Image (cartoon, rainbow, N blue to C red):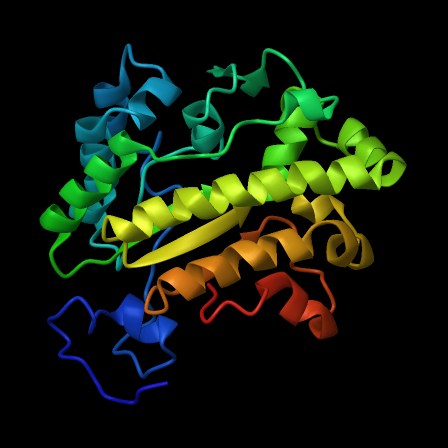
Amino acid sequence: MSTQQSPPDSLAGSAFLRACRRQPVPHTPVWFMRQAGRALPEYRALREGTGMLESCFRPDMVTEITLQPVRRFGVDAAILFSDIVVPLKAVGVDLDIVAGVGPVMAQPFRTTADLPPRLEGVPQVTQAVQQLVGELGTTPLIGFAGAPFTLASYLVEGGPSKDQRRTKALMYGDPVLWHVLMERLADITLAFLRVQADAGASAVQLFDSWVGVLPAQDYRTYVQPHSARILAGVGESHPDVPRIHFGVGTGSTPTQESNSWTAEAPASA
């Protein structure tokens, strides 16, 4: 790893990217996963009358919403306004985000016939990222994608679930089909993160909303290889783009498991 220091007033010299490279920082960089959202009155005004998924596929709206918390709070990084299920929608999965409920699938996953297609590209996201890079200047942009386990849970459950009962039933009862699904979702997620990195995102994050329901051993067996492949794939195609791996509810994971959770990403937050 290079020890050369970048000017503090440059993108590479930002506190966030310096922290990703494990270099000294002038202050602890701060950003919030949901910093662009309902807490902001300007967000609510802009989103009025526009559905969540529609918002995620409108480049000008994505750009404005992503910029709002940067303007208001001066956070150290912007994170792309998106949703975990955007890549599924992009490949043609029939789903919607229902107010007060969350993502709901028209047809839950049951067999290989229900496998989503591979992702070829998302021009709306490419345009939004390019616009944001031009607007943000020396503020880094973090790209974003949901991890395969969380995507699988929505597909299998048909919507949000607190206990992931159907997901676990598939995982334990038919591990071959489970891994086929996870491999396809890993392909989609890797392609989605590469779209963002290609367009100029400074870093990317793999976000796992539901993985905290699993014990560490099940995570290593059923999930970690697929998430690790995504992070490694981004590293191969974009070696200078830091990768962040975050799972909700994983704080109690024993220290000796930390390498499994980070999947050897060069930076974590």
